[in-house]
Image (cartoon, rainbow, N blue to C red; front, side):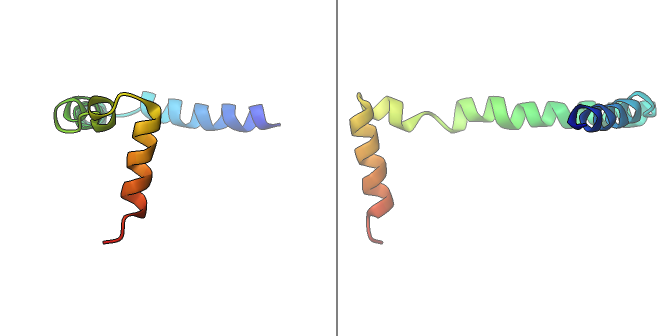
Length: 73
């Protein structure tokens, strides 16, 4: 029963994207490129892995996170 529901949902989207106009396909390509830029490239340059670069062990990382979460303002 569940497989049938998932197959029907997949077919709905598959048919919808397959029958898109050229403008719709171009817009989806632009959207996917923007998402890739936002999540892959910007993360590399603007969101470095702070915990891995500043702490050597998992214990130090967890202590820092707990301290930051429980620190009063």
